[in-house]
Length: 244
Image (cartoon, rainbow, N blue to C red; front, side, top):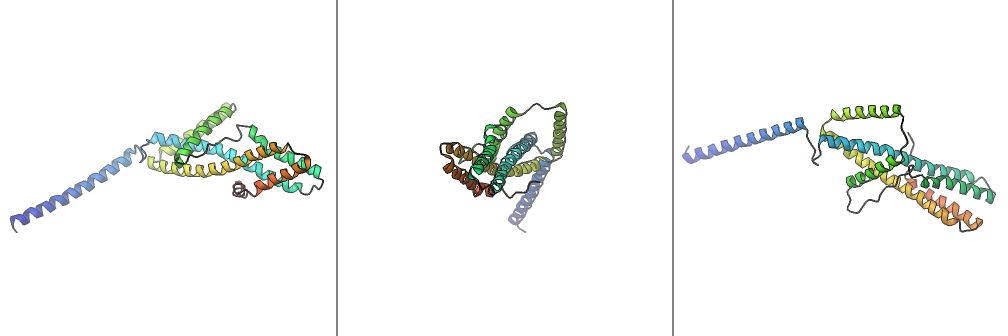
């Protein structure tokens, strides 16, 4: 073998060794990163993703309450409306229609019962919108929250300790993945809740405007208000859900 051949062989050998060293170094870095587990691709630390997890969980509970309240109010309205069909006296049924609608729209006056969710901006990502909605809901919850007993506070503190302990035993990446799923689930719930919230708001507006009309035309208007909700896609999407 000539000197040139030996030189090429030596270069190939050095190159191979260099690649092995490089791969080994990358493996070590990955292992060290897994052990340290200091952050995610988004740059958040473990403490930050745990905090986000807690926020999403708390807001989900709050939103579930408002969503269930809105859905139950509208489903109950439809049930009462169908029952009222057996009442043939127009004046009696007119009073029934007024009463059942007023039972729903009174929720509009209870700011702590149905929270207001902002509209998603055109360029706003799903995570950004969800976190913005979380901030608004957190403020609404604090202002409408009643006084808690010491037993209730102790129960909540214990629950938080158990949740934090579970999260501490997970990697940052695992928590981040869970947060992503929670964010997507919350986003879908926000959309469904907003649809029902708007129906209730529109029902109140239509009901108040109908007061300008005499009984007979208003009677027809009240029926149409309820039937419009019954056939609305936002209501039809959720009215068949089975409560756990």
